[in-house]
Length: 388
Image (cartoon, rainbow, N blue to C red; front, side, top):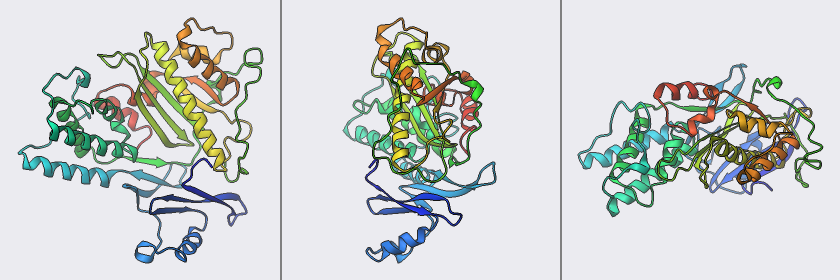
C-alpha cells in the first residue's frame, strides 16, 4: 500500500527465517528480490515474454550500473553507480560542442568555479535554442544525481533555480559540471546492510510526559507482519543560512541512511527567509523529521522491522547547538513565534521516540555537502566517508 509498483509475498528461506520477497515493477523493467528469485521470474515468463527470454542478476537498472561489493564485515552487498550514464552524457555533450568549436574545460576540481554564485550572474540571456539546451542539460544532470552522483547535488540544485531565465554564464557553469563529471568518473554508493556503530551516549533521554502527554509514533493500522532482519535508520541534517545572495533564502541538506546504505539525499532552498542560523537549522530539522516519518511508514508497510524492539528511534545528527538544545531538553523554551511549528513538530517526534537527536561537529556533518560550496579537499574528505 505504500508503493503501487512493489508487490510482496510471505516466504521462508533455507535457514527458517521468515521474510518478505518482492517484485519491483517500473514500466517494462522487473526486479525480483528473494532467496529464490528464479522461481518468481519463471512464473512471470509463463505469462509474459521477456527480452532475450532470459533472467539474470541485474547489471543495470534505469540507467544505473549495479554490481556486488564486499563490505568491512566481509559480507556481500550491492553497489549503485551512474558511471555508464555519465560517460554517455559526457560523450554526447562533447559531440554537440565539437560542432560549435567548443571544448569542455579540464582540471575541474569542483563542480562550479570557485566563488561562482548563479543568482549574481548578469551575463546576456540565452536565446531560445540556448534555453532549450540548458534545460536539457539540467534534466540529464538531475537524473545523474538520482542514480548516484550525490557529489553534484547542491550545484545541480542551484543551477536548476535558473531554468526560467538562464544566461550565458549559467550555461558555462553547467558545462563546467559536465567537465567535472568527465574528470571525476568513479563514484559508487554501497547499499551496505551492516549496522552502523552509533554510540547511545551521544543521545540524552528525558521524560516528556508533562509536555507531550499523548505523543506516540503513528503506526500504520494495516501494517503487514514484520519479517526478516530489522533495520536501523539514521540521518544527517544541515542548513546554510542566507546562502542565496539575492533572496537570502537558506539551503536545506538532508542525508538519510538505512543501516549503512545512503537511500535518500536532499538539497533545496527553503521557502522562507530566516534571519538566524537557529531558524534555518530548525526549518531543516523539520523537513528531516517529516522525511524520516515517511520513510518509517514505507518500511513498515514493506513488512520490514524498524529497530530491534528496544532501540527503534531514528538517529539524527545536526551541528547546531541551539537546535539540539531546543529539541532534546523538555524545559527549553522557544523565543520566536515564527519557529513554533518547526519547534513543536520536532520536539513531539522526540517525545514519541520517532527520532533521537545528537549534536555532531560541523567537520563531520555529511549533510554539509548538500548546503555549502566547498574546496575539493573538503569535498573529498566528506565523500570518502560514505562513497566508494
